[in-house]
Length: 373
Image 1 (cartoon, one colour):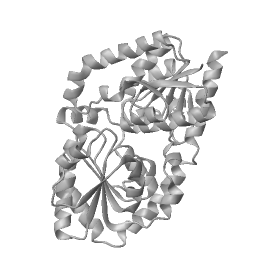
Image 2 (cartoon, rainbow, N blue to C red):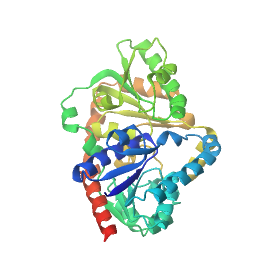
Image 3 (cartoon, one colour):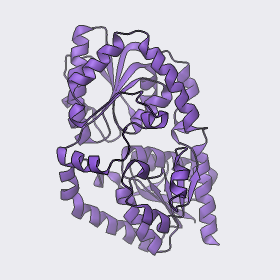
């Protein structure tokens, strides 16, 4: 039996890993897929050996306090490989955790592939040496990534972005957005939700008091309970909670979105919904991130379009006042939101054709066959 190990450690990676697992098993039902991840990887048919909840750090202090557990998890995974050796290891995003594991797998002569390339083009380029030496192929999701990695001595292949396979764009395009529905996507980690959702809630409350006909939909990420979201949302502001599998419909139905910076902002861009982007973490972590950041923009939609079509409010600017003012400006100009939606149509052409998950699965199976010869 051929064995593939997939390693992911956060919600968007789990989503991609689940879709990849389904496609791998569709192409070769005899595969045995195991790894580290979350509910999406498990429900797709993988044997979940390590839950990604063991690795959930947002702030600087979290990382420091969690370092012993992180190192212990690293040892446990490599011991699992020694006990039940996979034929290939597929890393999904999260380079800080996955690159040391890639080095360990390479030392064990296990072929390593990377699905959803680490965004080293946005950060100081620590990790390129490991990618060059230890990763057989980097399966790139974004059109500019192959050139970036090739010129730095890595082995990239352009697969395409999996979101184009996962979002039912043709179906969504037939839906008409409600200009007075405002979607809230506060993130997938408890700490980022604790930082952002109170700001979003205060801004939403002010908007609702001035415009009582507005209403709000809050997307629940996997692993985040409704109870936790309700803790940060005022009871006087009407809101419904949306399950993870229904979030694409919510994005399309909404006149605008308030979103934590991350995968959600590419989802909203591809669906075509104007989005206010915010992000806030603890000050020590923010200081480190600012020193490492190379990109002037946070949202993938803005990066790909090379302009700030989505307003970004980061760290000390991620306030209820700024979110409220931006929502009010958009609601006060009836022609503005349709104009932004039209401009977002360019994003799908830039990201490229669908078929990324199928291409990635084919590349993984081909590399696996090559490694057996």
